[in-house]
Image 1: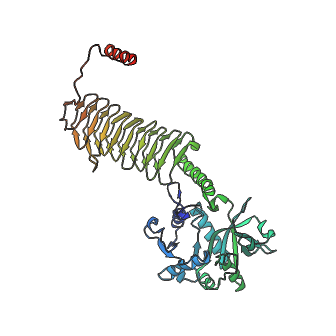
Image 2: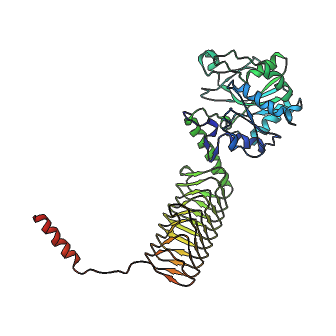
Amino acid sequence: MRSHKAKVLHELCGIPMVLWPVRAALAAGAGRVVVVDSPARALAEVLPDGVELAVQERPDGTGGAVAAGMAVLDAGDGPSTDASAPVLVLSGDVPLVSAEAIETLVDAHRASGAAATMATTILDDPTGYGRVVREADGAVARVVETKTPGDATQAEREIREVNTGIFVFAAKALANALPRLGTDNAQGERYLPHVLDVLRADGAKVAAHVVGDEALVLGVNDRATLARVRALAQRAIHERHMLAGVGIVDPAATVIDVDVEIGQDTLIEPFTTIRGTTRIGRDCTIRHSYLVDCVLEDRVSVGPFGYLRPGTVLRTGTRVGTFVEVKNSDVGPDARVPHLSYIGDADVGVGTNLGAATITANYDGHAKHRTTVGSGVRTGVDTTLVAPVSVGDEAYTGAGSVITDDVPPGALGIARARQENIEGYAERRAAAARGSRST
């Protein structure tokens, strides 16, 4: 990845890549989920509650990683205490595997009676993947790594069936085989696929399950493949929303994170980005805007060129117009913020209309302060509300006002210098300029 950050912590549609297979395993009904990390424990902060962390003390390959995970399972009342219980192994950099694909794989493993079942797929370009070598009768003979030239022959490199990094093992068989993994390869690592060789040498059955949709088992090896996987994930997110009744005018020009919720009959127009845990209700319209970790109730309209930042709540029927930014504010039902405004750290009442270029000056250089605007308020254009300040129900502000004191309910607040017209100013200015040129 050419990055200081662990590969599986790179974001994929709003969450770290590693959380995609974790969530799939949980959705498929896994009794326990263990994530294997390096001694730096970089993954600890992103794991959901109930997911356990194992530490691989030294980077000795995928076999060493699984051994570290099995040690955690053995330390508790987990499936590894049952010799026949299935232990599913997923890769943190194979994010698009689905719960349904996992369930199908586990069912195939149980039906086969094998000690191990590996998920494979057929790729047009298998570069970077371990190749699956089969016997004449179709049984799996071994998996050959291809990371360096010394790992595989040219004939083996031409094989298109690849190891996806997804396996199901009988717990006892896996536990017995892991200590016998060798490091006789170009990188000196303990490769998990070599467990299959150990099991076959013991006379155990090794099965393979071909996954027809290669998208489910694509691995991420660099930022280019991450972009390819992201496009597939984004397409699936769009389809999920559209099939649930959300209108997305141009999916190719729309970004929606995986945890976003959108209600039926909401319309998302092109060049909109919706991030994080944003929740949008029914019958809303979002035009060419950027939304992050905010809540929109029903019948809300945003944009074009709106920017809703974290903590924003737009109540039912609210309209936020062109070039409006809202941050950490609660904007009441049927309120209007038509255009060219910044509303930060504010509470706005029912039916209020904030005129163009209304600004809440929420930061005094040391701390943030809140602004309270009541119901039915009408601010004039170019009003600045210097927090902390309150504008009462049904109050008004004059255009161009800088409001530093509370405005009582029903009052008109005006805070600006009185206009003064200087007669003949243009003529005197021109004369002065002519005199300057002559000297």
